[in-house]
Length: 325
Length: 274
Image (cartoon, rainbow over all chains, first blue to last red; front, side, top):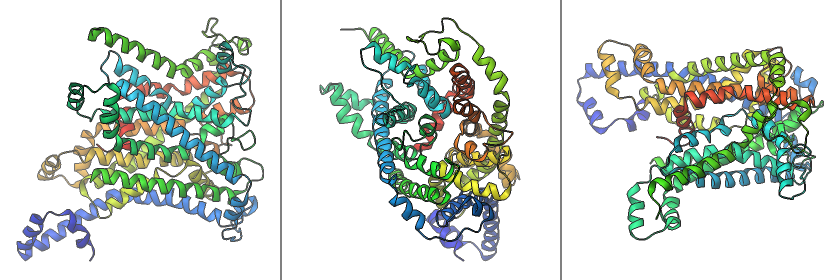
């Protein structure tokens, strides 16, 4: 059986030698015990396996199936949609919305994570200093991340309201003309990025802060003795030593930001027009946004999104594994 | 030269200013929720609730109570299902080390990266087939998919740290694997149980995409849809909308007050091991 082969790397050489020298009766007994142990451990994992198969694998399979058939509302219910191969994907790629949506997705994701990371890093360095109330203030910084997305999205929507929003009032105070944050095609994407950065800063702050605390204080003391200023210390010590944590935050941030849907949908629904439409909102708009749902193309866009997420997700796993090794 | 004490006070002041800036939207939500409807579109807007009204909160009590209760039910159900699946699996993967455990961990990592809309679309077809559409228990199943992979990974990370002597002692006392799990492992894993429960609840409570896709026509709809319906009706009563938002934020606030260290642990555990 293959069981023994898979087990081998986990057993220390000493243990294998001990097994080898044991008497035949002991070996049989041990094998039986090991088999029982294996069965028990599988009994503990089995619910998870069944769960993953039923509630992850099967929905994903359904989604793939949707994207490979020509579905209408009727055939969706009856389940007799004709197989259409890659037609849905071709249709989506030829759609005039595809490139703007891909571009918006990339702009939304990259600008969001770059600014979240910058702000998070600055704040993490700041909170790494010892001062009164720092623990409490750091805890308060978590609030935007914990609020339900519909709460933060609708609050931002009202703050950015063209006529009565407090942001335009603030601009008015410093003599800037009001901006149609959510209703003009030129600003809608920037506005949802702004709100998304606000939500993402706490995540970056917490992880980078815990990374900073793993940098030994003696390094800074030594650098200070050598006459390095605060900027030098940041550039020569903090930033290089934080690189592994930064890689993880940025990659994970990328994967998480790629799939942001609630925020954009609640604030602009991807509009006006397609100006803040990303792959996520476009997919939902195709599938559920109108009275004439296009499930096939919607699912196709979703699968393209998964593909992009997987590439960066696997990159993340590789980086994380290499750091553990 | 400034004394360290004075420098620390200066830093605290900067910290307070930064926090105030960051939390301005939260303050604004509170402020608008207390603003009388007729002052809503005034320029300049009232920066402070000088004439506070609780009309918005009265509207919440009138319109949103069923939604809030549904969200509570769905949140608790999601926590129960998540713990039921993830705690035993975490124990097995951390301590019993079944074959293929490593591959399973990678599957869990990847599972967390799948966009919610894709899952929602997949569930949509399945729920139609099974007649689960617009049911609260269907939504519990869908919401639990957000928390289960996270839960298993938290339990693996935590339970790997439990010394083997503890389980060995239980075995000497004649306890089977299940007994050991139930009376030794689970009690010492309290922190992990709390962390997973808190996040499971919060995510289910906050879920919008599954609710909007799978439960938009049901009698039992969660609070996120309650708010969305308020906005979607082109209802201009922003004090009621913001009052609902404030009430919907209560679990997040409680979580922060009661369990702050678990929250930070949960954020970090999702990204960096140890």
